[in-house]
Image (cartoon, rainbow, N blue to C red; front, side, top):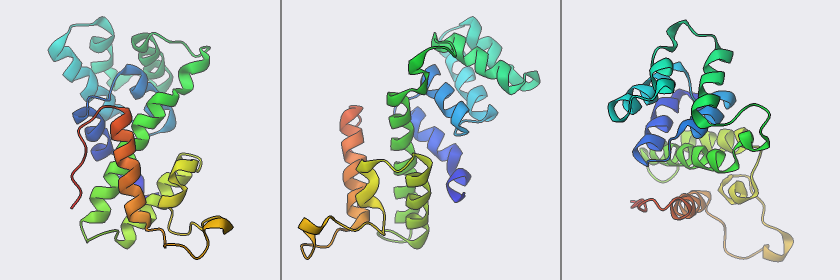
Length: 178
């Protein structure tokens, strides 16, 4: 998937938006959205603020196996693998926001919704198990019959609308779209 080429940028959006915490990182690690570099970077930036033992251990993950990294993140996040909420609905929404914001930035580089932008929307839509709120962003979306013949839906405008909605949920300054 092409979207995974942009993971460092996605991670940076979470970080700049102050949406990154140990549980969000854990959910991202389990889904393959956060790699060792992201975890090391987060732990190192956390060490600048606080010398938490978990941050010190995570900052030195070079020799750890993935299951050990997972355990360290669980410990830091204050959860364990038996907690039902480790699936992290809120944390997945944070990742969704970062993915969509990245799609917008990449797709907008060539104007409103380049072909690459639409390919990335397709990939994010699939990666997040086809959430209903993203349906109108998908270029192949067909409105229900009761809306047939009405104004055409612009997937790129719907993407912007969804980004604004998520920014409102997370109390983030709204993006100024050009």
